[in-house]
Length: 524
Image (cartoon, rainbow, N blue to C red; front, side, top):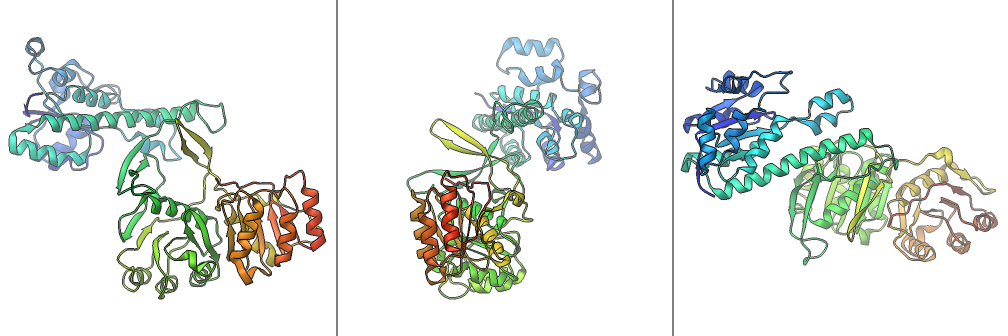
């Protein structure tokens, strides 16, 4: 590749961020500007001299701007090889000006279709044709042409022009790579939208899933120091998600932090408000709801204070001073917190009082939104598994009391709470709760009996009067007898075992009310 002095620039942008400042810098550096439509008007309004592309090509913009840059005098000026005799003769023969800099970004298609009120006709008009063509032409000819497809690139390009008259071959190659990624992402967004509009087979799943991911955060390592890692964000990621959360304080996020923050947010979203979830290794070790957030925080931490040390916390309402004071007590240590917001008093306490004040990662997510059942992807060797997220509330009209004894109102409230937490515990999952507080959880065991034993052990003396939730059915009645022996007073589970009648009979023998939800919540 050879160096390329920039004398002419073609500008046609949808996102006009930094455009005027960039254009002024180009003009000051002796670069002649050519532009189209709204971009030209923005430059002229700012008092910048610019030549109209329509006047240059001799072809007016037509069809409401659909056709304006699809012309040989545009693409010939971009694609010509500066060291090719034939190309240079074609420029002379057809009076084509050479463009050494192309500044183009594309219609906001993905942003437009993300709005629920956007019609199909409106979406179609946001499919850019001329823009991608110019971007690809310039990127292809990066040996001689500089392509700017993102306003964030303007300062680097302008600095190169001011210092040496143009960009280096290495800069142009890097900019070309970013430009091709830009058009690929753009086309992926259009393909995804059309797939949703036209695909009817396999329910929620189209025949092809295209991932549009951008690296937003390099990570020091993955789950272990010998593993490399980074955070990638979907182009259409919801604004109220961990990947879009604002970090208000603390050290850089780790791979494990992000996993636990996302899990903590999921648990908190399921809890009655105000609620707190305490996470350790992707499992809730504490969770509670109460009339005040301070009380909920105290109860959630007390669920398993040993495991809570060094935990990740999720809140479903803004963190207030009472909750922050609880966390600032001696002997407590928190790695990270995710919450809709923090009161000024809470932020002051968390960043000035505890020993770990400088390190704790405080993530602000904004308004907490209910689950939508969006498609989740999970990698396996050579591919991905896709499923809809298990984040929607259960339909209680499907619930059925199957025992002779009916749960009291207090027991029913605790059963709802235990069931809400249980879906976030790794299978086989057993949860014990009382007074809307997690007392013990048995997680990730190969045997449901072992999970029952672990949850009872975790609850300790508090097990008496608690309720039990199981993420899947009991295949035998052994766990029911153990629960009754421990002092558990009510049970909620999906049902569906061929031994349901045996399990129900065991509950009736012990006078335990039991609810079948007819919905399983495995979490592997």
